[in-house]
Length: 278
Image 1: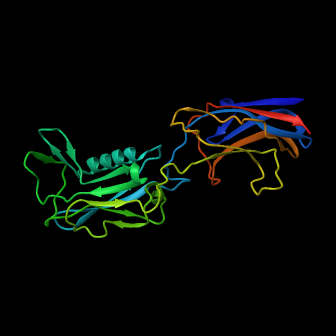
Image 2: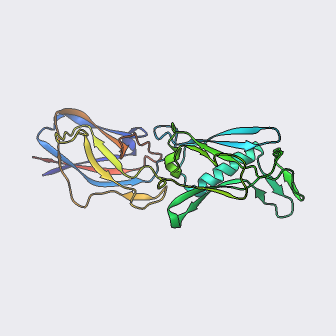
Image 3: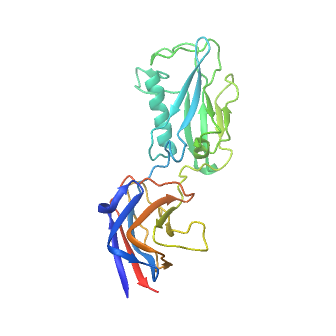
């Protein structure tokens, strides 16, 4: 005989926590539990300030006298490399570091992020800045370097995990601002654009003596879904885990593969827990 319990949005208490109150305090030591069904939306950030700490880098931009430093903080969100490039352009526009073609109505930027699918890499590409405003353009307010062949530089800190997103070793690229022609920095290691590769579900009433993560109930991936799409994370067959102790409530929580708290943006989920007597 089995006993199902449904968890849904009405049980949500925090971005990663759901609680179910039982009718009575119940000794669950004689029960095992499994995920029966799990339907959840792909709704977690791949870039945020905490806990991923992968949202910052710095640009150094040559100017007429010396250089300007632009510290970029990426707002918490779900990004691909194209999105990161758009966010870079947005920052440059806001700071005035662009020129605008009055005929084609197109902005020109001197740095960009580009995905290279063939080499499984991210490229940071810079082009030399002009020493004065070209004919037919207006400026967003930037000043131009006094000498030719000056490039933007990106600095990736060792203390921030943005380096993992684009696969760069911590450092400054290009290493010096003066370079002839287009400069391309390519990922040193495979970029990890989506650092959340798997999701852990933990349940407060279970105990696995073989694991340091003794409350682990289920693990699943995003199953190839994009942000906002529904994931069917139901197991192929029930996988029962022993329970322990007396409980008045059950607490179900979500973490990433490394044990970091996984904050869900969309709490509209349905999970069926199945209890059975040993």
